[in-house]
Image (cartoon, rainbow, N blue to C red; front, side, top):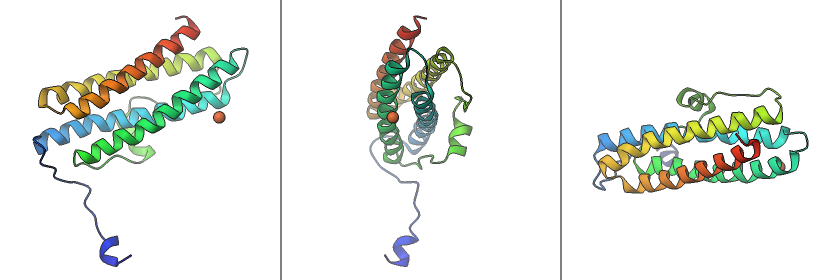
Length: 168
Ligand SMILES: [Fe+2]
């Protein structure tokens, strides 16, 4: 690969698709929070998958596997949407920690406490998504709105499943 090719650096693109640069940046910023929340929730869901114990092990172990796989795929879609909007996708744990209001948690907990934690974190992602959808609809970014509405529906379903296990 040529030195010139390796020196390419253009994280900010300028697509002219009918959205202003200001609107694209504002939406990308909100999507960055959704991305950070999703990454935090991804790792915490995988942590529950690994560390869950007790009579409910099998069901929760399998459910959290399907959840973290789904979130993992969504992370890529969200990040690439940020790029399609012309902005740089946040890509470090430090940045995710700064952007997300979902905190790290690596203590061994009871099964009940783990489920409660995941429910609260899914709810946080939902709130971030709702906040991101608003400017999308306002500014005519239907593609991002569509992506987020689909993700929001998935998280609300995940919350239903997790709450049904705890019946709370
Ligand atoms: Fe596994």
